[in-house]
Amino acid sequence: MASRLYTAFGQGKGSLTTSLQAFSFSRCGRPDLEDGDKIILPSELFRAVSRLRLPLPFLFKLSKGTKPAHAMPTRTGKAPPPFEQYCGVMEFSADKGKCFLPKWMLRNLRTREGGSIVLTSQRGVKKGQWAKLQPHTMAFVDLAAAVGPREVLEVAFRNYSALSVGETLKVSVAGESFLIDVIETVQAPAGLVMLLSELEHLVLVPVLRLGPLQGRSSRLCRQALR
Image 1 (cartoon, rainbow, N blue to C red):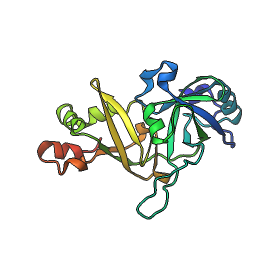
Image 2: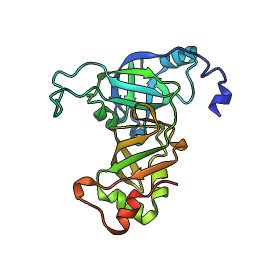
Image 3: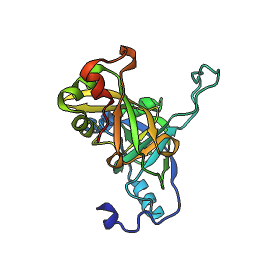
Image 4: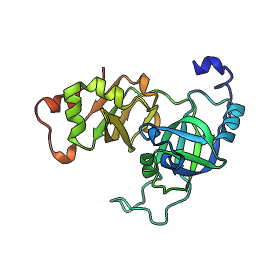
């Protein structure tokens, strides 16, 4: 619908990169946006994306603006690369130089309230075929067993537009909140999945720290979204 209303969007060839001060939604009175990957950007950026004619729906990559003073080394002794978070846009209404994100997204970026992030526009991202997800607790698996995996996953991810490997998402189903890790995606560049509505499968895998699952929950945990 939006593409028909704004036919010029997507025809430009430029890109947008800018630094912003990031805050959680609680700072702007919008905690209702915590469940999802849409963020609030400053109004002046809408003029920028309009001028550049970026493709719809808007998709951006976020990364931490400054190098952390003490990066946690891996087993190889090398510091891990900066985490890159992908997101959509809810609206352009923040004050100049500021943006508002879900708290879980700030944690993924290892950024505190008011920290600096770099926002970069994305274009030409291909859709993924399927994604493998791992809930933090058995409660989500039990809910999928009781209600049905397809129904639970459709509700849980209705506010998400993209997935990237390594991120931990917050979803809400039946009044309960859950944390879910994205551990693998297939047929997507750099581990990115574009537009969840176009995915063929979403797969739940066992909660490893609780050991092997058994019985009906084990079967449902591996069942794809068909």
